[in-house]
Length: 255
Ligand SMILES: NC(=O)c1ccc[n+]([C@@H]2O[C@H](COP(=O)([O-])OP(=O)(O)OC[C@H]3O[C@@H](n4cnc5c(N)ncnc54)[C@H](OP(=O)(O)O)[C@@H]3O)[C@@H](O)[C@H]2O)c1
Image 1 (cartoon, rainbow, N blue to C red):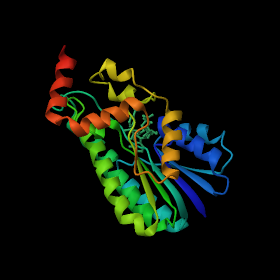
Image 2: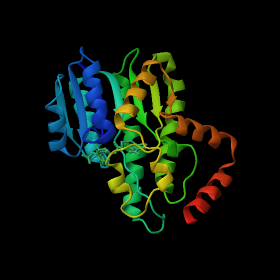
Image 3: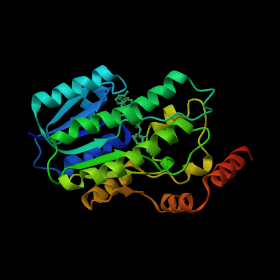
Image 4: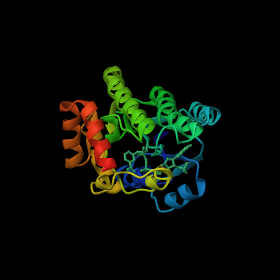
């Protein structure tokens, strides 16, 4: 059985991956959609041409991740593509935000992504693809978004290193690093703090991010940064000391 797995498939970028993959893949048996909200995934699946398998799982919970492992072992599929989109962010001061929620962020953004990647690789063959949702937040530490930015730096670093290990198997990983994307992400992220208004001016659509990511994956690019302003931001983060960037952003935020 040839399959594609998308985590975070109930909303935003993950849901858009499902839609665009449905259009571009005609010779797969199933798209496995993973998230907690089963109803939303069923609605999305109802308009697709490929067969889907809706898998309602809370990936923050280790025992539920084990259920996915068992399912993969039972079905023994050929995974042609894995897209890890499940993730969330929380803005606000580290001390003010709940410890439990911030640890859950690390659990989902880092541990679950790592676990699902680990589970999938043995079932991937030559030309298999992995797409990991990192973020432009991975390029530099971010005050008031500290744990999220750190979690995305992990995703970027992990993906780039793993690409080297997987080259002999001809499995290709793309870390996707967009700036702000117009999705429900901010409904939760801004519960306790606001993103810089300036940042929102650079928002792009999930359609754009996914189109760019799939093209980058096809071209075997290890990292993709979807828009020109974020490409520029990445270059700045490479040449300007991070302490300066932190200070400039903090002053801008206060002023
Ligand atoms: N939007 C942005 O500005 C932006 C920018 C850069 C990177 N990203 C990254 O892109 C990815 C997708 O974000 P998005 O913008 O599409 O946000 P979104 O619309 O809020 O989607 C997040 C997805 O993650 C799933 N999810 C959350 N908690 C989960 C859990 N415990 N178990 C399983 N699934 C869970 C959600 O489904 P359920 O609630 O149904 O579980 C949903 O499908 C994230 O990794 C995010 O960090 C977003």
